[in-house]
Image 1: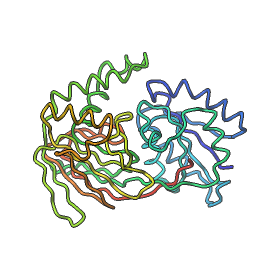
Image 2: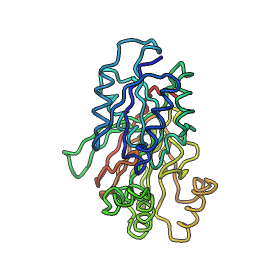
Image 3: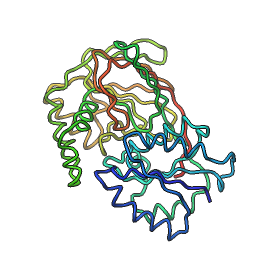
Image 4: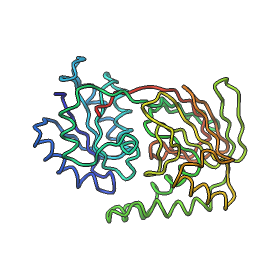
Length: 322
């Protein structure tokens, strides 16, 4: 049996994680799984926690002795734990995931259970790791040479419409109030309507596999994705699959209002938006693209601020205990 360590983000899912954690504790006790738990106490704390806990992992390849970090939270918490592990002395420490966030798109793409007792029982039957695709993403800002970040991604990196919504939601004065009433999604929905009115098109250049530039003058949304979903269950790219070593990028041009309504209907129902005029797809082992002027960005639901992004991404893999 692995050495399980649990990282809990009690604020995830508008407090859902705090409610479900006692149930999971009881379920783990019933199947006699021993573990140590650690609470993420502030924004970004899960990163340093994961680094510390992975650094403590035993130097062994035996699955019954290795350390496995169990994440209790949302997609953003999984992202933080992944990035913390990757900067540790044991960057291949496996991750198990109990979804307790607002969106849970990563769990949805992998059909992971949200039932505490089912999750605990599954932990006793898993006997090997499952490697899943992740993206190694490097970000710079062509207007700010000081800005430079490197992060690993599990879900998606969005620029434009969806990132603008995330930015407004994360900085909303009413978000905390709504979260206390478990109505955080209302803030997200309200900001979608705001961004529909305010989001302007931007210029985008994507460099294909032959390093040839493809220019877009009226991009409205561009999402580099590892999974089919974003935004809490919206199937933005039905063919994306973290079991495949492939980077997918979808670009949507600024539509007029009737076409926008049609695209929204297709995205929410049948996925036929990928065949629509003004929707463009790129695939590859690595991707490079840049935008102008500065736009909001989001990575796995985290507000990345407003930058004139230059993005380079490559495929990587990470072991999961699922």
